[in-house]
Every structure is written in C-alpha cells, then in structure tokens.
Image 1 (cartoon, one colour):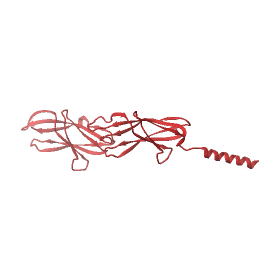
Image 2 (cartoon, one colour):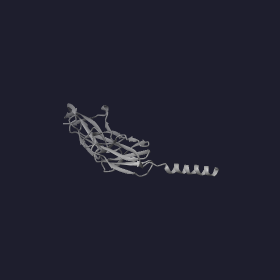
Image 3 (tube, helix red, strand yellow):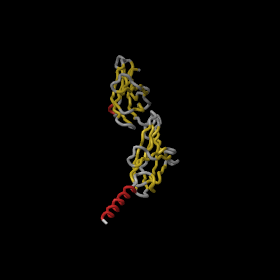
Image 4 (spheres, helix red, strand yellow):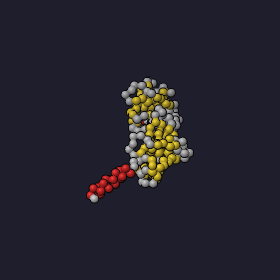
Length: 237
C-alpha cells in the first residue's frame, strides 16, 4: 500500500511537471497593442514630430526569457497588431527604429498574461527619418557694426557664418549662416562634446574666434545656448 501511494505521488509530480507549459503558442491568451511612427525630417527643430500610425510595420514577440523571437506579425492600417493562442506567462514585444545611418534599433515593451487573458502592451513608438538618433544645437549671434572704427549700429548678425567642430579637433565639420532673427542651428549631432564658434573683428579688422563648448548628452535633444552665451561680434562694414 505504501509503495502504491509513493508511486501515485511520483506519477502526479511527473504529470505536473509535464503539464506545465512555458510561454509560447498552445494556449488561449492574446498579446496586442499599437505601434506609432515618429518621423524626423531634416530642418525639423521640434523633435519629435509627425507622429502617425505605423501601418504595415513588422512586430516581433519573445516568449519568456528566450534569446530569439517566437513569432512576428504585421500591423494593420491603424498600427494595431495581435498575437493569439498564447500560454500564460511573460512576453516581450518589439519593433524597430531606423537611425540616419540605416542601422535598426529595437524598441521593446513587456506584458504578462494569465490563462486565457489578454495582455495590452504599452504603445511602441518607433522612429524614422534622417534626423532621428541625433540632436540639435541652436544659438544666436548679435552684431555691433563699425565703419572706419566708427559705430554704425547693432542688430542680429544676419548671414554671419558660424562653425562647429568636435572638441580637440582643429577643423570644423559643418558651418551655417545666421538667419534674420539671429538664430543658427546645427543638426544631426551625435552625443559628445563640441565647440561652436564664429569670428569677430578688432579695430584693425583682424578676425578673432569666439568659441563656446557644448555637450550633447543624449539623442533627440534640442540644446539652446543660454541668452548670456549669445555670440556678440564686431563687424566692419
């Protein structure tokens, strides 16, 4: 009798182990959600902008702690996706953002479901466009105008040229001209330290550099130079 009871317990334990399913297909659960696309075109100083439904976008699902995705689906015209017939457990869903270089970066979200449950995944925001994965530095240039060393007036330095280089590098990699409102902007900057500079003139009309160091710490930043660091230059006219 004792041996039969032990055998029964062992069989029951084996059944529990065998009947326990890992995350994946074979159940009645659902994981679903939406994907939104944020487009970053050139000359867009608002990062991010133009959020739309990410239609016809691939979405992938990872079962539990797997190192590989278990299935993929495509979103509909509203950016909606659904994975069906899932067992209880934890799931990770992801789609891809595209950097200006063409490199794809996964954007993930996680959810847990019970038996027959529906897991609503937080909306996934993916990015596209040439300015994504980069930052912008904006500033202003103000000018004091002189002619034959006589003061002639002042105002925003329209069309004055401004340069940018990586800190420690002697040569600039980009330059822009100042707009009517004195504003200039450098786009598509990766995280790092930069020197933004322009030139002023002394009374002998010798050009002298005016330099400001800027640190870009994260992607997607808009860094505006503080009012007290606005470049003030002397220009001979």
